Image 1 (tube, rainbow, N blue to C red):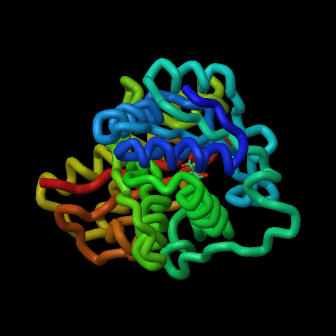
Image 2 (image 1 turned 180 degrees about the vertical axis):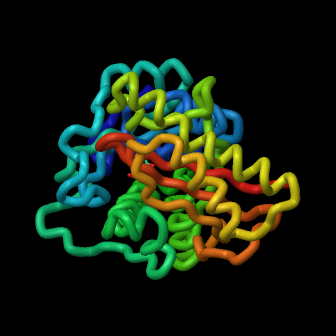
Length: 281
Ligand code: PAF
């Protein structure tokens, strides 16, 4: 695996692979890699000839009171995992490399970028869209791989790619879950044993909504109340949102159909977790 921190060197390596006729796959990450990330890498390996990954904890997608400083950084372990999966290039730039002094250009995906996590975390998707656009310009991938777990992020990135005519296919990889249903997330490492137990409430709420939908319930308000009832069984968990929405626009829909997204976010102690499911009868 080629290990690079400089943009120019990354470009040169990716260009050489492209000139050799290889299809370029790209997996952007913030590190603290778990099996969810590894599923992205494996899918990239399956579909592409040259796979690049990035590790960059992007400061602009964290709010002033969020966890940028304490976000888990496990670079050595991450590097070994990527190498073991056969990743060809790892790009791990510094903040200065990605945001040259005085950088003032940002990308706003209006509307979508202010819904769900964008509403709860103002400016979050401005940071995500900006860094992902920069990474796409550096890597120039044929296909970029993202997890379904970050459903709102996915909608923002797909819309940005469409609006800015970026020549990249966005591939979506299903959520990877722990045995008890908890969606894998780098932030799960923040949870105490008791919080870890409580955290299963997100997937339990979604499963209950799915069951209700499969039994014929389509009314969004009712499906939301089903989820909220499950959350109420864990009184110390603070629900941020429960939404029944259209997956591409993140707009609320009055009634659910196949393909409708149910998305939840909740605070388990200080840790904010998200999860979602696409309804499909
Ligand atoms: O999903 C993530 O890990 C991040 O939001 C991403 C896409 C790497 C941008 O920093």
